[in-house]
Length: 176
Image: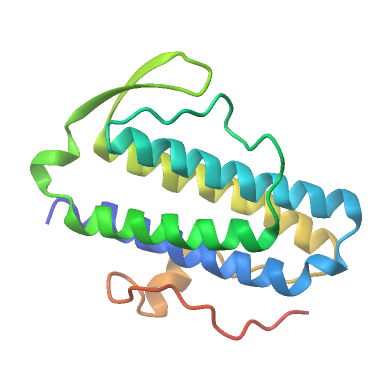
């Protein structure tokens, strides 16, 4: 099915995001203040961009003036919002039909610049955008002696998560 790669990628994104958030929640107190702020800023940026593109996919104005919050939310708020947004994306990707993948939607970036992307391109964007920033968070964790979530799509597929779980696992995470 043509939409399968999008569904797999979005389900992987949810699994990886929830796994990383679980590790961060267990270890954030071990981070120096500067790194803690960077981790929260990165998680907030991922969440904000996900929300912006959710609005774009729904073809409604997003109302954001920047790709980040004015004030950094708490980790608990970020985790809850990320889980809800990830579930929305998984439901969206599961319901996406082939005719919709290449449908173009006009929207505006947070700086007001007009843009157009297909639904498929938007899903690719949110998945790839988050992957890059999850890597930055993982480096900050590693720098501080913390083992990050195994953020590889091969780990996701090996675990049998592709398309079968409604909730990504918040498995017991071994933290070193």
